[in-house]
Image 1 (cartoon, rainbow, N blue to C red):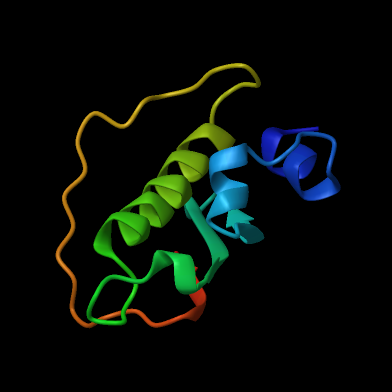
Image 2: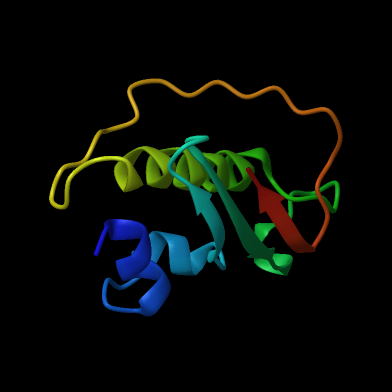
Length: 100
């Protein structure tokens, strides 16, 4: 069983940080090196403008990118994020946020 299957089956618990972001694993393709996840953005994620604060969005992106990489590695191996840069096209609102 690979890491993706372990997370999907519940044999490997979702990390606490991902739980805080409302992480839900939707799909993963080893061939395409692509992962899809959904996050539940609540009111506690809002900035003064009433949209999701960019730091929470970056954390969501980091969770998806890191998980997609880890799913491709042997069990027990991890890779840290060395650098992350994001440019946003439009604001995100409370509710479901999907990342691929």
